[in-house]
Image (cartoon, rainbow, N blue to C red; front, side, top):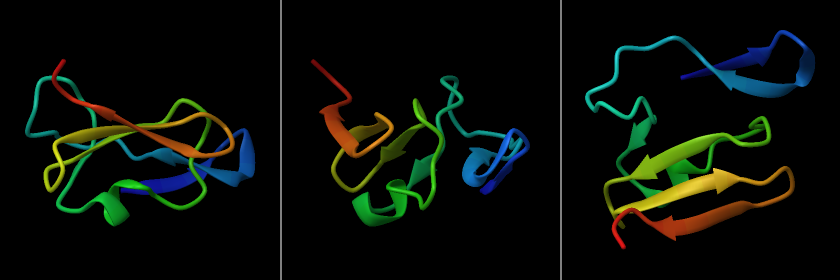
Amino acid sequence: MYQADSDNSKKSAPKQLVFDNASGIPTFATDAEAQVANPAKGTMTYSTASDKIFIYNGTDWVKTSALS
């Protein structure tokens, strides 16, 4: 689901995909899958296992609740 960032080969960027949700955030079955390797800062993913959104802050994945 990710490919090398055209501006920086050490980072990944989402491929253009058809999403099953209106948000356009890539959805994964587990938390581990949602924390993709080599993401670009600001990458967001969603885990259906924990109902959490993951946001990459440039250093670490930050997990937050999808619902307040």
